[in-house]
Length: 629
Image (tube, rainbow, N blue to C red; front, side, top):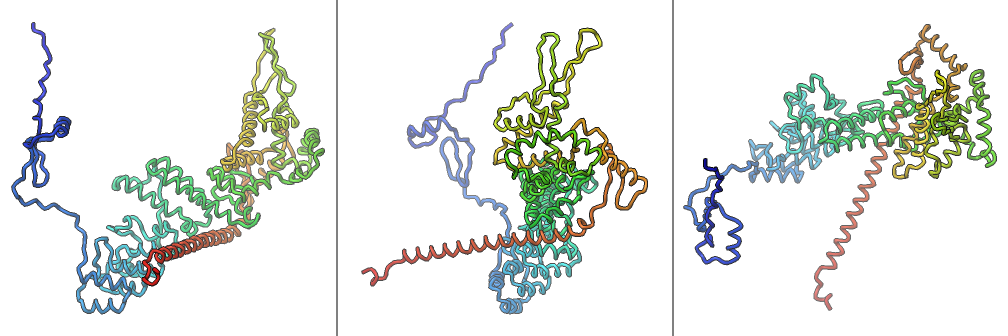
């Protein structure tokens, strides 16, 4: 049987040394070997082949379809010039002489005479043009909003309402400047024009709050069936740009800070769900968070900050913490808000309490005070049980003292314990790092200089005898050890953090402070002892549960057990709107002053540039014959 052999077809013959009839040169011959022109290539009136090129017969070329743009006639150009010159009398005379003139004519950019009058801020010209028959307003109202022309906008909206009720509330289709979903209120909110927003809301304009991308409500599902994805995401982003503007927030809510927190979290969620627009959503989230920060920056005294931080709005978890709004800021990750100097001033005042005198004590007192406190701990425990309102108990109730007491008492139970390995006989003793208050201070002090042992948080338990003779039980308190290591690690992080992440450090420090503010005065296991204060709280809960007073309600949850929900202080409810009004006024006043300063600097720069141009012009001007000598 003959063996099959795969044959390869022979290559095509090589092209001639020259593609043209004229003598070929060496560079042309080398170029032709690298690139071969197709045989049927045609450009315009010329056709290429391997023998050269030739001219085709003179045939009329087919006319291609071009982009159709409107263009002005001579009379229309003259009409535009009169409107641009703001010559109202000349415009009237022109229309009287040209009966049937198309007053809605536009140039190739889609600009009409009414557009020109709006851009010139001429109220009289706009009012006259609106009186003409069949005037087409188009997107002129949106242009008036963008240029912050409230009086001209009122004229345009009144005309739209006269043409068709409800026409002023919707967007404009086929606009060369604005998408069709941009309504007057959306544009005014995006631009931040405070007075126009107020006027539009009074006229009944509204903005539908955007839904999250993963919303599965009936409205969102209907939009998904009819709208394309790009249009839906662009619409959502534009709506968020409108509702997150401070000017709109101040008109649409009584608690701008809470609204800023909620919108900031929503925008962060959108940035994760729609990665294509992640940068835009993150930028909006930062801007709305900065608005809340700038509001508290307008506070002028402690009383105003105290009123803001005591607001409970938005906090759905029961807590007796003095500043619920601070807890909400921590939950919403509003780091700039928490780290703001005004907020930190309030936190530090609660954290130190009356312990601020410590820095004014003598060195001897400071050195001996920790040992004195350690000796007083059993006495404080007795006072907490019998006299919970004693001054000593109140002093130990300061959050700073709570932290020192809890950390110092965490390892006190394990002091002196030794664990012996039965097989090898090796003994391991409990380190004295945190067994008492003074040892804890030493460990933290040397930890500042990274000289504390990394095993300072280890817990050592004595081996217990087993049920069988010559056997032992090795016990491990992993939870206590984990708590100790976490506390020590937090201290190291708080000490060693660098200045360029000061906000992160302050945020984490505040979170740690609040954890100790909610702790009991006595450390474990002393906190298990029933105290008079604890028994009094339990009796009060039973009393509220049975008698149900109007100002208090007894609640119970699995996570928080029994607690009493109290009505908000009347002062907080009454004074908070007044304070928000003052802060908003201060906020926008500061913005206006900043804008005025920037405009003034720009005008000064323009004048200086104009002066330089004039000097250059004079110096470069040709000299007169008399001056040349």
